[in-house]
Structure formats: structure tokens, C-alpha cells
Length: 393
Image (cartoon, rainbow, N blue to C red; front, side):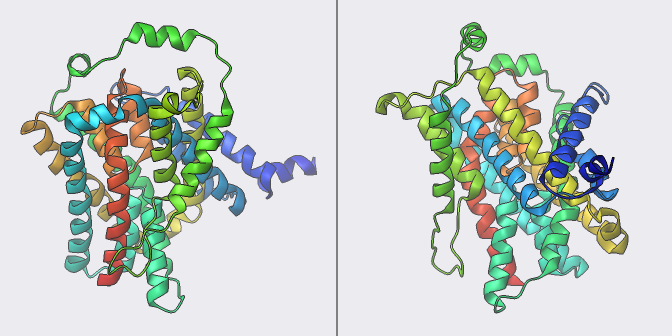
């Protein structure tokens, strides 16, 4: 039975796949649990992943990195395919307002992190890691690490990764709690909000979903390839020591929006049914969250016991305060629809789990469209702000 023991407690690709599959399966079973009528969705996968990681279950580093990044690519690409046909018309109707609100969340979060550094004396590099963990933004973390390395002759600083790892779970939870809190405090009637959105023909959509169509996966992987290429292009800005990139999430999202919007005009058929798209989306987000949770769980309690518990508090403040301030203004003054609001919040924080939860309570694609509308600018600003934080340290 040594082979079985190696699969469960050993190393390698097979072991990693088993642990990831176990985390996803158990997490989805836990999703049947409701807390005061609210489901936590894929957040359960994150929690269970952290627990397994803390218990000593590890993933092969190369496998874990691939699963996380490829899962994220599948998720954002499927979102782009869905919202693409309505993206540009929606942007004309309210995209500028949504992007201004998202910019407010990004800037307010950065200022909050910097003020915590000033008030508490916490190392600014650690606070940069906490900031990007609290908004679940890996490209921003990478930009901060690269900027630090360039400024210090190739040196690395572990505080970035430690702050990020400790803050990430609270970031996911804080963003989710903010969305749920807004629903409670504003007494949101989901059915009423749904009637206020610009709807597509649900009967036709349902009929299309029931029709069995063999998906043409060629255009999907072509789009993913082009998206990764786009996300890898360095964008040089005056005054910045390192180039800015859209990353492995921003590039595929933009390409999938363009493909789904203009494919018919150029003769490129993307015959993927709504059900196939949903499958790709769910597979992507569950792989991403499971990998993040298991990786973050390794040494999680030890980091907290060594002073990281303050980082959890800081992450909660950074993840919730900007959202609640901007969302209150958007709802009370601008009268933004709740589904557009939570989609904007998910995009401004570049948080796939928040979008997955938003989509689960929204019958239309309103939340996904809002997410896609603000995501590119939000990602760009997150990367810029990461480099600014390092330059200030």
C-alpha cells in the first residue's frame, strides 16, 4: 500500500491533483450549508484549502502554479465570452461612471494601506503585500516584488509574500462580507433589482442552453494564446522603473471580449454553448481557489502567531473600508443597481471569487458586464500603485 501512501502524503503531479480534487469536492459539498440564508460559494474551497495546507498537505510547486494560473485564465476567458456581445453597449451607458467608482476603490485602498503604515510603523513592504493580498491581486504583488528587486540590485524581500499570503484569505472574506453587508444594510430585493436591469430574452437563452452543440475548442485556445501574448506585452511608462503588464488575467479577458464581440464580422465562429461556457468557468475558478488556499495554508498559523495577526486586521480594513465608502456613495447618490454595483466591486478588487458569488445571485449577466467593464483599468491601476508603494518605502 506504499503507492497509496505516496499519492496521499507524497509529492508529484498525481499527489497534487488528488489534493486539489479533494479540496474542491469537499468545498462544493460544504456550499450546501447556508448561513442565515446566504451561501459562501467557492469561498468554502479556499477555507478547506487553507486547512489542508496547515495540516501539512503540499502541492508540487510547478503544478500548483500552473493550476492556479490556468484556472484563472479559463475563468476570466469564459466571462469575456459571455459579456462580450453586450460589453461595448453597456460601457456607453454607464461604463465611465463604473470606472470612476472602481478607481475610487483602488486609490482609497492604497491610501488606507499607506496610512496604516504611517500610524502603526509597520514595514511598508509588508503593508504592500497585505494590500495586494487584501484585494487578491497577484499581478500587483509581482510588480511590487520586481520593482524592489530592480531598486536593490536583484535582492528579494520575503515580507511581500508573507503579507500577501496572510491577507489573501481575509481579502476574499472581507470583499464577500462587504457585498453581503451591502445587500443587508440597503435591504436589497434581488427580484426587484433584477427587474430594473436591461434584460435579454431569458427564454431564448434557456432554449439555447438546452441545445446540444459540440463546442469548437480551437477558437478558445487560439483566444487564450492571444490573450496570454497580450497580457505579456511590457508597457513602458515615464517615471516607472519596470514596465506594466496586463497579466495572465487581463490579457485573456480583453481578447475574449473582442472575440465574442466581433468574431462573426471576421468569420471566426466561437460555437460554445452557455452550458459549456459555464462548465469552463466553474472548472477554472475552483482550480484557482483550491491552489491558492492550499498554498497559503502552509505555515499559515505560524505566520499569524509570529505577529501576522495584525496583518489580518489590516487586510480586513483595507478590503472593506474602500468598498463600503464608495458603494454607499454609488447606491445612495448615484442609485446604481445592486448587481452592477457588486460586479464593479468584484472588478475593482480583481477578485474572481466575488464575481463567482455575484453571478450566483444574478440571473442576468449584469454583474459580469460590470466586472469586465472596470477590470482592465483596475488591473492597470493596481499594478501602478504597487510600484508607487515600493518607491515610497
